[in-house]
Length: 245
Image (cartoon, rainbow, N blue to C red; front, side, top):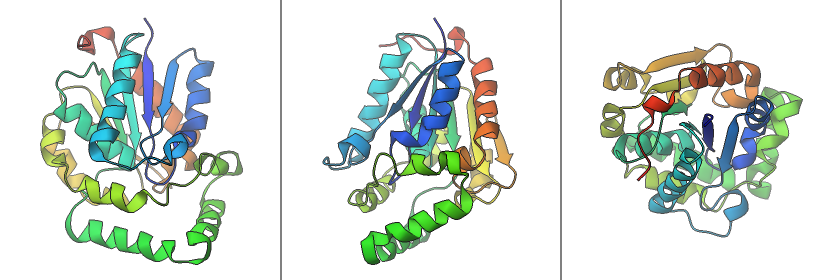
C-alpha cells in the first residue's frame, strides 16, 4: 500500500488550486485526491455548512485510507477545517496533517474585518473579479495563476463559510493532534496572526516558513511546497495510521 494525499482547498477557490501538486505526486506514483467543498467548484449550487464540509473531508480520508496511509493537506480555510478534523476525530484513519496558511483563530475582530473586506470587494463591478485577476497576475507565476480560477469562484458561499469557522474550537483541536503535523506559512502570510499560539498548543508539530511567499504559497513557490510535501510523505508510515472504522 502506497501513501495517499487528500487535498482541501481554501475559500472562494476549488480543487483546481492543487493542480501543480497533484501532477507532482502522480508523476511519483503517489495517489492524490483533491476535493470540492460544498458551495465550491463542482458544488457551487450547494449551500456551505460546517457539518457538510467536515463530512466531505471525512469521506475522502476514509476512501483514501483503503489504499494506504493518508496525508491530509489543507490550505487557508481548508487548512483550518483539516486541522479541526484531525484534532477532533479520533477515529479518523489519518497518518499525518499538513496545514498551510492557516495559523489563525477565525474569531472576533479579525474574522469580522476579513468578512467586511470580502463584502466590500463583492460590491465592486463584476463582484471584484477584475481586482482578483490583477492581484494574481502581480503575485503568481504564469503556470499556476489560472489554477485558482479554473473551477470558478465561490462568491455566494464565502460569507457563510467564513461565519461558520467561528464555531470551531480550533485551540482544542490543535492541542489534541496525535498525528505528525506540519504547519506551513508564507513569510508574508496574513494568517500567521496566531502562529505563536499554535506553536505553544502543538509543540510537537513542525513549523515551516517559506521565504518571500504570501498567503498563496502553494502557487507562489510550488517547487518549494512540493519539496515539503515529499518530506512529509517520507515520514509517513503505515504504523502511523489508525485502522479505518
